[in-house]
Length: 255
Image: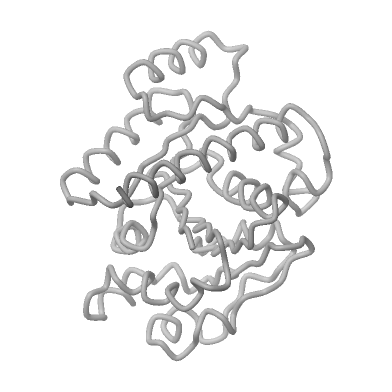
């Protein structure tokens, strides 16, 4: 089981659409895939036409009164399941803070799912908090979407510093460009400069495109209503790059 957290300190970077579309791409390629919608806004759950509601909320979940396996919902797509959000997730920091070893709680909850899924995507809310630290402990890979703007670059630097300062050595940070518009000179310049200064950046960029924006209307992953477009091809290419990084990570760990 590989746990991939789609995370950014900054909001509005296409985090949820990327989590949903990458999970869909993984499932379409035969991998048993789960999306856990950790954002109280429940956008990921909305995209899958599943109500953002968990009986007992975050308190029962973290208290161990509800196992994740019993909360998982099937989606309309093969190999792709969803653990829906709940509005009570807005209080997850407080609930975690009341527990011993709070940053280990998500990892503990996910452990029983190891035999069920090849990939688990965590769709995370945009902030640095106790929940974020629990996500960092639970995840093998941190996928961070970056819009080619100055503020987005600043949040990448903040995230890199946090990982170093907190000795999160086992967590692999994989940034990639999201909502990129190559018609804009600023976007092209920032992308070129960042690729040079940050070789860990993936080469595939997810475009700023109307077909991706339609997800809110269609309420499904991009590939559910468009079989082939520059955007779907970008997600296919991005997923192959991510897979390659994960395989290299496992290879290095086993050497």
